[in-house]
Length: 357
Ligand SMILES: [Zn+2]
Image 1 (cartoon, protein in one colour):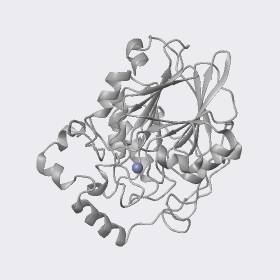
Image 2: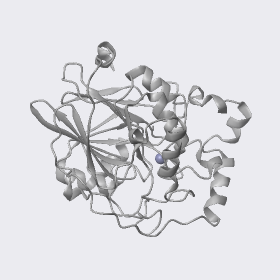
Image 3: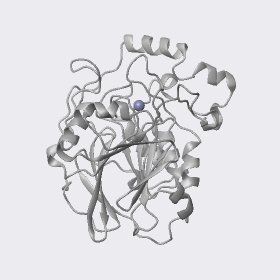
């Protein structure tokens, strides 16, 4: 495996963006290096710009219980990296997926410490339909939230797909139907094929488990024998890198890409873990997605950029790249939107690969 040294996972050198491949640059910014730890401490102890303490959102539009027509997908933004995806299927009820669910007040191991939510979840769990599958991209507290997983397990006992090393955390929420996958490995479930894919990131839940569990992204597609559904890419947390290109080469361009646009400043500390909006728009272009929905902004203040800046810069970067901004438009918090992707061309023929993945 090119991203595991027998003890810890790492981002392979080949994943570095071309512009950052100079060796000196790499040494200075190796995530988790002592240089980085010192800089992070200095930054966290300093004065940091503050977001508004609370934002009240308007009543959301749409209904997360709506049953999308076969071949369409209903997307509800819950907040941060949590989306509810309802995938319409012919002759079957919709398949319902939740990504990196977090409904808690804080993304932290502590109830009274750590980043606090600045707006309510767009929808509460009680407002959502039955969940068939949970995707967990990595074990950082803002993506793997045990209270939320516990509540979902108690109500729906869904399947969980995650990357290697995260099941031991997820089991603490009482979840039992967990499958771990390495990058490029997949699972077939109810006519869908869900593949784990790379992200350029890292992981930790304590000071002692840095990069002991793998991080990644997911691609959802129709299983080879199933009728077409939109292909959906969920990026998890990621810095910029060559993996956008690898993912497109491997799976073909997704219909819909859920891409992070926030938590990027100060750049020197964040650029090896989170894309900025311009890089997110670059990822959208490299993936060749027909549509993107931004995520990872406006919910928890993890970093220094002002609360409105991620969406402003995403819009500006679309305009600068001559992309119709409607193709990378945010969903209002809590709102449900149905995406329909008329099929004009066949999906790439990868039947063999998917069967063996
Ligand atoms: Zn993370």
